Length: 100
Length: 163
Image (tube, rainbow over the protein chains, first blue to last red):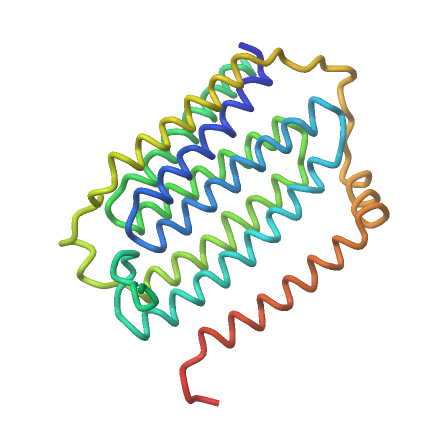
């Protein structure tokens, strides 16, 4: 077990836990947090390869991923506030206005 | 010694990630997520990505989590305590998630580790030069993205009818 595979395993574990959380949980805010978890797993993998391949592109990509994550969190939470005003719930199952 | 420290950080991060997706109270989830983000920042430090570690602490554990906790408090309701934590699709979802874990684990175990050529000397200066020279256009696009999401956030979250 090298240090490299430890880092990669950590990133993979974070990503998989994020996937499971996003699919399993009903609370919309927790789903958003699970997406943050997934993005962090990807970031760990990026930076690991950046270190072991001696290439800075991985870190550049991580900066962009963090930017997109910030935008995603802000817009997602704004949607949540707007939805909460319409129907006071944060449960994913309750929000079915557009369901056919 | 470093290896033990690494194991400790990864164990802490994994444990708090598990607690993030399994606690009932969303506020506890958010606090455990902060712990996970800080352990990710520590792993960035191990990989000599100092700038990213700082960005991780300030932007993720600071700004984004404050935003999330703020919205949590704004949308706090009593229904959280009565509804069941998981729904009926949970076994299927866990099956799919477990399949993903198995797949990634298999790929990780199968692949031989990369050879470490030279110990990289990544500095913040090199990162900045690369970001502004070779990745100048994506950088500008990111600024446009931030601007658009700022406007969208204000417009969407604004009360209907108020000017």
